[in-house]
Image 1 (cartoon, rainbow, N blue to C red):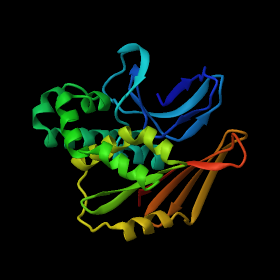
Image 2 (image 1 turned 90 degrees about the vertical axis):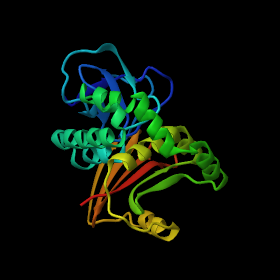
Image 3 (image 1 turned 180 degrees about the horizontal axis):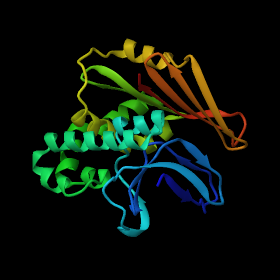
Image 4 (image 1 turned 135 degrees about the horizontal axis):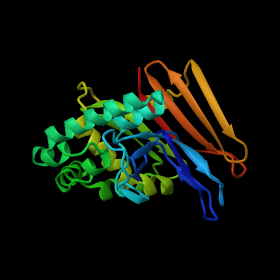
Length: 256
């Protein structure tokens, strides 16, 4: 059931990013699109996809989140670019199989559940992901020192993804979740070997215009734009809450 209703009871706008995993209820779900939710909102119907295909029994009356990680890019891709439940399940299955190979000692407990969230929260999996993420605090210090607002992600030297935010501060808020999601992808995604450097990363970021553009707008809140290019997709969320308007988050993925 790809519907989940959210009410923002706070006095501030709420930013939701595609890839955030909501646990609980009868299924764990991943948010499929970036959006801004107004303060004191009424019920908002979120675009979500199930990331736990084997359960339809309530595990909890309360909803939560994967506190230290969001869905890895290979799982975010079908939710954002295809909006297809079967494709999301296929990528979840591939991610779980890949993680079982990367962390054999966690395989028995992972085979007992189809939950992406539970698999990624397995202590042995977390330890492995942490070892790959390594000095993420040190990396964040370097990013802040350079005034960076985003990152370009390469696996085996092949650029696959980028996340860019409105500010360094916003990148910092999401950094812990993002770096772990990238690390998980590196453990479970087989990619061709390439050679990534600063020049190729900048070229990847510069190519954000395509041959098809679709825009959705919620007046006074946000504008969401999807751009289809040659071998890539770009997703941009622009805040309309205040003037001047500005891009809150931009995600680019290799996609064909």
